[in-house]
Image (cartoon, rainbow, N blue to C red; front, side, top):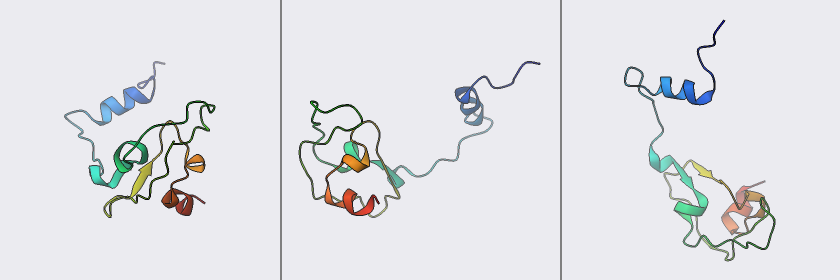
Amino acid sequence: MERKYHGDQDWLYEMTSIDNPAKLFPDEWILSWKWEIRQTKDLNYHQPRGRRTLRTVELVTPPKDCKVCVFHGDPNPEYCNDPWVKENWR
């Protein structure tokens, strides 16, 4: 028997087709900590992947409408020294 979906991308493609448009969260609800909230993005590259920290500490907080801060790539939240992250990542 042939499977309808061969992977998650096949399912996503069908679920977001013209006949079945995706219902997405508003863009302002989900922001990247490194790329959209912080000012600087420079990493300490002498550290191993997954444990890299940012070169500077920033006193930033997400905008009021932000519901989810995404941490993709480095740094992982437990290695981010920004005060807001340290306070909220427990």
